[in-house]
Amino acid sequence: MASVSPDKRRKMDSALEQLKKCTVVVADTGDFNAIEEYKPQDATTNPSLILAATKMPAYQHLLDQAIKYGIAKSGTEEEQVTNIMDKLFVSFGLEILKKIPGRVSTEVDARLSYDKNEMVARALRIIALYDEAGINKDRVLIKLSSTWEGIQAGRELEEKHGVHCNMTLLFSFAQAVACAEAKVTLISPFVGRIMDWYKENTAQKSFEPQEDPGVLSVTKIYNYYKKYDYATVVMGASFRNTGEVKALAGCDLLTISPGLLGELKQDHSTVTPLLTVQKAKSCDLEKIHLDEKDFRWQHNEDRMAVEKLSDGIRKFAADAVKLETMIKEKMLNVKNSH
Image 1 (cartoon, rainbow, N blue to C red):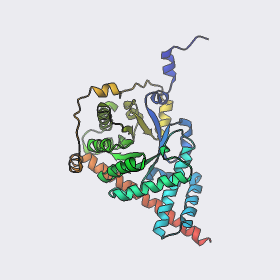
Image 2: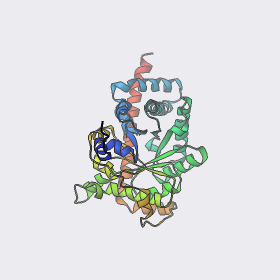
Image 3: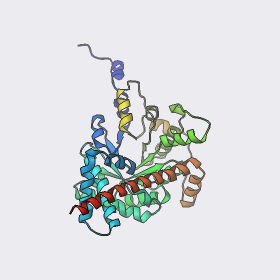
Image 4: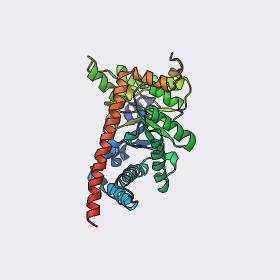
């Protein structure tokens, strides 16, 4: 049989397979049954994704188990609910880890976004729950909001406890610089939510991938990190279409919803790495240092980032409240049935 020419083979490979050659592909979902067919390296969850998955019949048993665990631990109702939430998030993480070779990201309650010490304490509780289940902390990334307090919580967790952090809700260059200086493991700069803001707040209602403000933001951050040899890696997140994903090919990691992973699997167009260390080294970004007051000022100068960070925290917090309400109703049923 004649050998297939490299060009023909490239045409046969899906965009997803091509992307995996230059970028670590991560699944962004709580619905772990949806990830097997895409064979991602890692997976990420957040309160909204866990809430969506918890409503599915397939995952009711995880909620039931978490409630039994929380009730058995006793304490005030508030303490029980907190224990159940942590247990539920970790239970999803454990199931996901059975299906991926890499790491899972588990988020600390967004309502703690301005409380450094509480974020550290909650993160260590989550890590302890994984440890009880036999999972080494190296397979877990703790997700924290990229507020100044969140970034400093990340610094402390990495430095003092060897806990790997994933800084999320990252929209400004100032946030990215502060994260690199805090030496966190990974950042999740958002792409789609940045584009959403520009569509809502400017005259332009559509963007080609190469001029997409979210794509440009992540490209700038990636170039800055690689130019100045920061160890923190960049994981683009929050995609609205596959064009945005392909425009960031070459980024360290990209976390992508199952819906878009499915589209990339069906797509047979050519994917070329657009982000490279070589290109980054020749970019003309100046190195900057940010203390707390500089960070707050520079972040505040970016109206989009200020609005999207606070909006993102509110949305995750609202979904955490919905999840708590669900838990309290179920707890009542369990207690009444005994």
